[in-house]
Image (cartoon, rainbow, N blue to C red; front, side, top):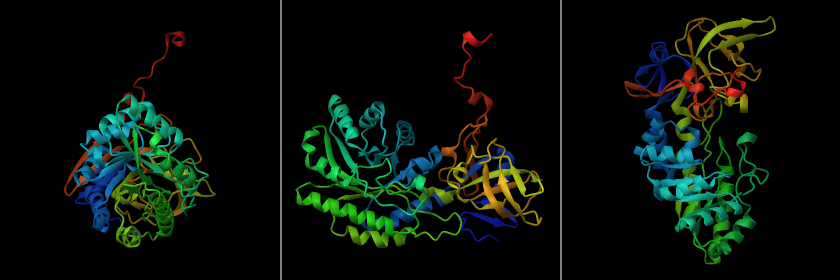
Length: 424
């Protein structure tokens, strides 16, 4: 019925299912808005990368920023995944699900002293360092703790990847990484960092990149950098090629894990370093859908607006990036499709899920599904307009469970108080 590859989300008898469960049954029980994740899609995508790169036995660090739900993390940890983390909170979540600390890479341009110390105590594999001041700070903290820690330098290859500007990270116009000249100087002078073992090179050029060429250009540039280090007697033990593999949202034709591996692996032939990867969206993006309920259709004489009960606070990607999510009925009604904007209740003109989109109409109160919502959905949600964040549900076969309860008003005012000097 629909061309979009929705994996373990499929129609049966004119009803959308997630694996063996009717999506409508979950929505009726839990309410809307709600994120629904397919366990099978999640683990299948992890296994595809693992199998494609099996020849080099990489450490696959799931980019937790894409989706940090504990059930998602536990399912991936059970599959042998490590985690790419960018905060102390993400480190705590990794520990909570029993992750192998020797498969944890800690990125972020602004690690605090407390976060660095906690990661050292936890015994993570390495820090991906983004600047010289950060390197000096980690060295200082490690010295205080009488520890030696492993560090990879995130080098910025100065490549303008073909993706949205806000998720393009490989250019020197962006805040990420260290320029190659400075990075080389750090490697050559690494003896001054007495509490660091600087033995890794890291690159990450952006997200939602659908072609291999930008990755290959960056990898070749980084490998040339590694070759230069080795000529100076510096051994690189870890090479982290980052993440950023794109998925299908609309009409993209992204590479498969196998196609990507077939192009990358020949570049790594004969290398002795351990490969790290940081896929996020590729693993979880199409493992989730977002369910909302149609409130009514508004016609102002100029255009039509399908108003739903979810807003940009729940799923901000369309508002922030102009991102496309296919919108389909959970239970097709037979009503003719309508050309409209699909909008939420937030008091912002930017609260739009789709502009001038032909959407299959449904009755007021019926459910709609926004596809490919597993990555950068709930994790980027907010309480704007004093709205509670949505619930999250995990489905495995014919079993399902709420894995994040919907917030309530008490949750929203927890910790808030009115001081005595303005209470009267």
